[in-house]
Length: 253
Image (cartoon, rainbow, N blue to C red):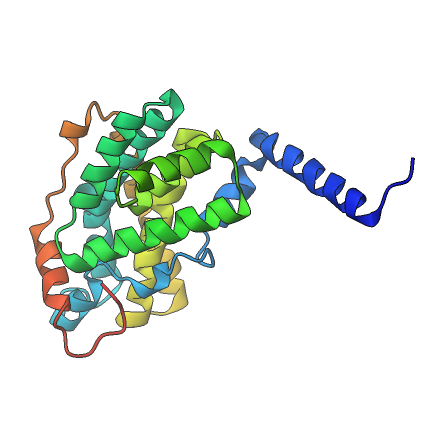
């Protein structure tokens, strides 16, 4: 049997696709490290979640106040709410419940206190989902993304993470904690640049936030229904609203 180079290349592509779709639990850690890396192309580095205005006001001015700000996000703000939405969306995906996923995605996209916070989540969600679909394609991932697009629903960042994680059968607990760590680390990185703080203080902040991230994950895993999800950080929402007209800005939110 004579095989052309084109045939050989096609066979190789097919083999790679099969191997990818058969990826097992051993890929969980490498995949989470890739998806939650600061180098993953979501543009996360350009968002501060109102932190830039807080630094301008003098509310965040050192390591302690930075940790307090990020802790508040994780305990009662977008970190808390998005973690719950991630859990609910992951479960809806695993159950194949398109209507439930659509409802969760709509609520997640809507629960933003300002235009900039909406941009922060929606832009990262679009970029995350597009990148995962391009580099780690699979039918379940494409189906969920296409379903939401057909219904005209914006995919917020935590929902995009949930869809990708469920499609690739990543453990919910690991996915959730990795997401919360990435949220905290990105805000700490913004604080290091804005205050400014040294790199070692940045790592001290991340270390100090480990327990808060773990508590946020535990609360999210115990969530009952979508109606149990809340966010209570009016001060951060107001900082974000004021940031929209801040004279000198490094960040988009």
